[in-house]
Image 1 (tube, rainbow, N blue to C red):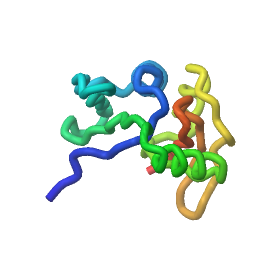
Image 2 (image 1 turned 90 degrees about the horizontal axis):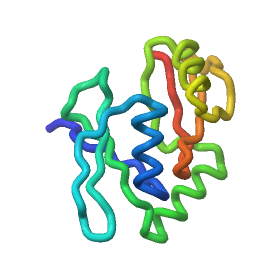
Image 3 (image 1 turned 60 degrees about the vertical axis):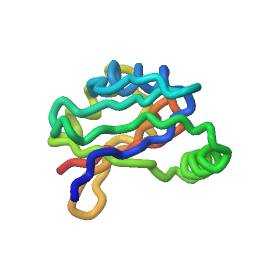
Amino acid sequence: MRIALCSLLVDDQEKALDFYTHKLGFIKKNDIPAGEFRWLTVVSPEGPGDVELVLEPNANPAAKAYQAALFEQGIPLTAFAVKDIHAEYARLKERGVVFRCEPFAVGPTTIALFEDTCGNLIQIYQE
């Protein structure tokens, strides 16, 4: 058994695709019409191509409530690993990514939180 897909709730798939590809640097893997929405996935240029992030529409009221509650409480929906958090923080800030905080130490690692423009807080952490 292996992890192949991980869903991320988004309020607008096109806006999410733009953010995750142009701001973060992920690569679009699948973009397939699926009724009112799309089967839309991105992959990391640094990671295995078989692990996909699904940009999942939050059209379900329960999904919207869950996403909003996490955002309001400052809880990230997911986290991405980086090798040099200070360099990644600077790169993303330069691309216009809005951070909630500068990188700070938490136990044995360093983290930072940013807003993805699609209703989520995302954490980056240094490996």
